[in-house]
Image (cartoon, rainbow, N blue to C red):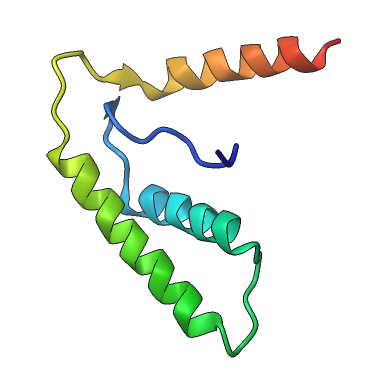
Length: 89
């Protein structure tokens, strides 16, 4: 999985439309192998991003859980600590 795509489900506050769109963009970039599409592929690229963002938003809105929402700041701090430990070698 692309390291730039972050888990968006079960956080407080919930994922924003911008976060969902950014994840969709990263996904389309990864599977297409294109960071920026050519003019001839731009429409298909952007349509794919929009469709995936829509599907991801629907998914996030329909998932259910019994666990309490995670705190974004706490999870980000844990990720920074893991990263610091991994790259301190």
